[in-house]
Image (cartoon, rainbow, N blue to C red; front, side, top):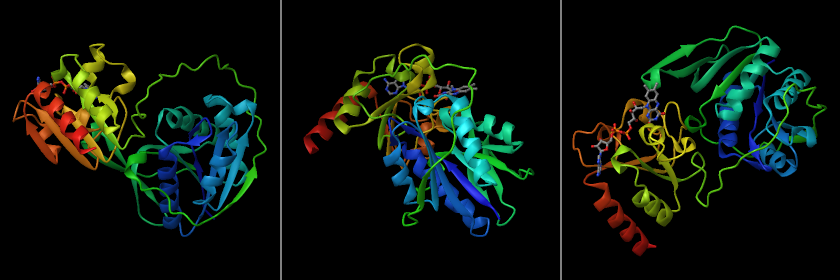
Length: 318
Ligand SMILES: Cc1cc2nc3c(=O)[nH]c(=O)nc-3n(C[C@H](O)[C@H](O)[C@H](O)COP(=O)(O)OP(=O)(O)OC[C@H]3O[C@@H](n4cnc5c(N)ncnc54)[C@H](O)[C@@H]3O)c2cc1C
């Protein structure tokens, strides 16, 4: 009998938005596997509330809570994931393809002798479920089969709806101690910002090379809209903005309700990180810019003129 284990991601005891999408993916997978059970695992310190939230969308929740798991060290967290997978004889392990998931999933797969499908966009088939995953910056979608008994899957959270609630599963502590890690956690340098986190935000205002490094109009509009700020790689490579703001194939994948791209041409590598956004607005002074091909609303204009006007209009509406 198949059993799906969804590994949630949290920070300071608060679940990441994508964890709910991972539950949605787990539920979809379980249905395709003929009604398998969906178990969830949360690892950290002080994660009791997160566990209760997960229980709404899972048949059972396992909690690895304690000082050994206080920091997101891949070694200790993978040890907990492996303990949970063994305890419930998990056949499918699902985790978001975030930095956390990408760090942990290969370790879990290797130590369980499992095959892995990464950056999965959707599932196909019933019984013997195959995985659709993006390749070449999203220009091709491959369908892959994992032939090992245990299968590890990292999913692109933005491609799956949040899990349905109402399962109200049981919550139990997991017997796991984090093993004997060969690495030691030293410090976590958090980038402090009053703005929402890029991958969690409902609205993102992003700037490209057209800003020439002047992000004032981008930041002003972001603040009026309560949005996160994003950037193209050209901007980050130039050192105009930090790398953690980069959206795209080699940056973060976002799918907010509203994505405003100003002064970005719309290179395929950038589109790979934002084309799942619900509504895309592009501001570019070149009417031929490829970004207009994916935009729901396009404005051919100079961003230094258009964005302050947009900010002013949005502020008045508020
Ligand atoms: C392996 C690989 C991975 C990559 N990964 C990423 C990635 O993750 N994310 C990413 O973004 N890129 C990535 N790139 C780079 C990508 O190919 C592009 O080079 C980059 O996205 C271009 O950034 P841009 O749109 O800001 O700049 P440009 O392509 O130079 O576009 C600037 C745009 O601004 C417009 N403009 C100029 N002035 C104004 C103005 N005043 N008002 C309005 N519009 C104006 C111009 O018309 C132009 O369309 C990757 C490339 C490779 C090879």
